[in-house]
Length: 140
Image (cartoon, rainbow, N blue to C red):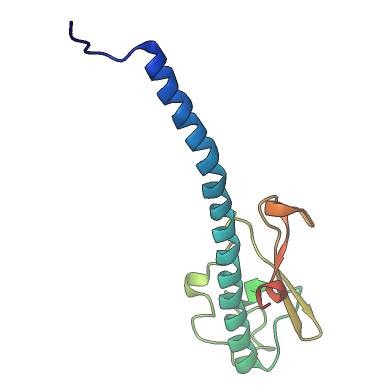
């Protein structure tokens, strides 16, 4: 007598094995995704910092905290920034967002620049995936 199908027990064993494999592999894949997002945020911050440096070269100072990164998309004060780059410092005047779709925070403390991403939780502070990411940490 020929047997042409799997028994219920054989199917259950295969399903259990696939489940175990998935439980071992999935956390590693998900963890890599978060690491990649954090690395991308650092790359974005470096790019923004380069634009800020160009702004300073052209105008002699960085934008104030109040003017924010918007100053790289549109001249905030034509009298103050007479050498502002034609076409701005961001293409199409679009401000970049972090890997989670949130705006970057820009701080200028008397010429010391800091960029901050609030991380996955979009809240100040946080742990693990929700931890804030700063330009100064990216440089380390």
